[in-house]
Amino acid sequence: MSYTSWAILAMVVYGANAVLLKLALRQVPAEVALAVTNTALVMAGFALVVFRGQSIIAHLNGSLSTVYLGLACVTLTVGVVAFYTALSRGPASVVVPIFAMNFAVASLLGIVFLGEGMTVSRVVGLLLAIGSIILLTR
Image 1 (cartoon, rainbow, N blue to C red):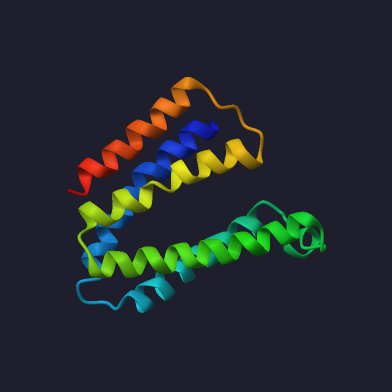
Image 2: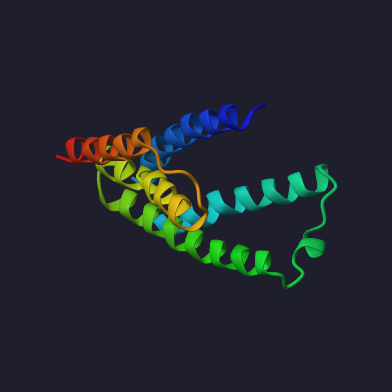
């Protein structure tokens, strides 16, 4: 599958996940849901490493990439805990669109720090996305 196919699959499945998670959070504390869902994610990650013949240790060699991976762990942890907490306290129809704006943050950071191109259509797209969040959260 192409990267866009994977991205579309992620979009659809993650959208469904938010609804299922919100339903679960009616009776399950956010911390419990966080532990259970992320344990499943970790198990799937290890299974993929084994299935694809990768070595975790070989890639954790103290390089700058290892530092970036560590920082990604921190930011992902904070983001997921914040998302689960917000979803346990607020309506999915508001929390999920705000959370989903992470793509705009990633897009801007990619332009600034990764040298990815800034085009008029990207600027318009980001402005429309921000406008949609304003409308969806009212």
